[in-house]
Image 1: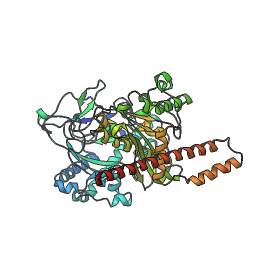
Image 2 (image 1 turned 30 degrees about the horizontal axis):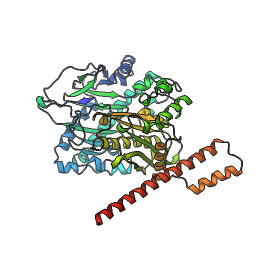
Image 3 (image 1 turned 90 degrees about the vertical axis):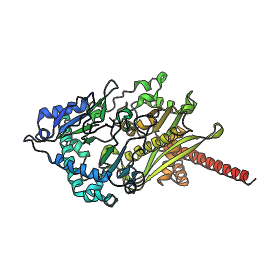
Image 4 (image 1 turned 120 degrees about the horizontal axis):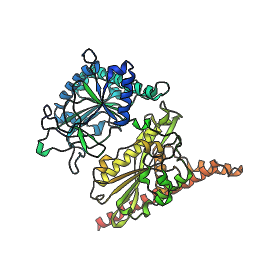
Length: 523
């Protein structure tokens, strides 16, 4: 989707219009089988649909009635002075995932290369509205939000009711056991769900552009209310068509369509990378579906490792920048409430390391880290590391020093995270190809070793070298040197020792340069 600013939002109805299916919320709530089949096909074929919020008797549903109050809140919010709105800057106070706060117009890149975005926004998390955690309950917001909390509460409950109906219908059609999708979308459970209010600036026809990057929203369902023309959907042929705003309808974007046609666990569909003559990790994006974190075959694993180990000797290495990500945490629970998210812990780190160029063709390893001191899952930490890498890449590619870069590649040893994330578009908007690739964990790839070391160091889960040596010696004394545990511990010791030496030498070189610069200044 992308947004085009209309000249006159009330009257402007541009062409061509997208042909989008209409689904009745009341029929879904009544368990209508024909409507359920229609919804399934809309999600599978289009990934987007209109949801009719009017009842059979012509009355408005509760969700439609509460949405008008949200428009009033939006007006009051954006009518505040810029100074007042900036007191709630989302980059400063929105947290790691930017779930609460204000974004001014023109802060980020827009949909046209070289131009900034053309909208301001304000985000309010579901956790804040429903006061699910102490931190979210105390999050500061301007007066219009505080005075409209009862409205926000009612709107959130009404929206949750609609999305529950949609997910229940899809779960039934797919024959999912138990609560199906709704088992992973619990209203009273803390989550990254949010309400985002958007205000686009109108543009004269001669200056009309795309003030919002083309993108697919994260999350399972995006529920969109709009009374203005301007939203566009990308067609199969690459062109764009307009989404017509319809009174009494909302538009829903569905992102679980990949599950509908997902192959059985263990079915590997990455023949390209298994062929040693055609090693191309660009083809690995989410193409290997497996029930475990390991790839389908040892041949696939060998191909991935060979490709990764050759990163810095490629012919096009000068125009590539490579980021290695990892995460570590103090595990407190073997399984989170959502099994596919993996174990959870109360202190986790998300890190990225990369080779940073210096003058004279030299380079040095650099790292960036983010510490999560609240309870998170390992999947969340791994995804945060990838996002951190993309943020570093965006800053570098957009700078003078990175102007020559043509490809950004991010490596993660968490396969499910690689399958899930699709947040490349800001960097691709600068004309740079972005590759996201999985790599086996704890193999002899230096970038992955260094990322693992920094992640454990940041989360305070790095093993004491003396205790590691003692464990290895006990296994030697007991004659247990042929098992997998012994080999794993020896490899861990080697990787940790190497990483520690890399960063110690780098820090010594930095100190030496600083002393040299001081000597030159004093002379």
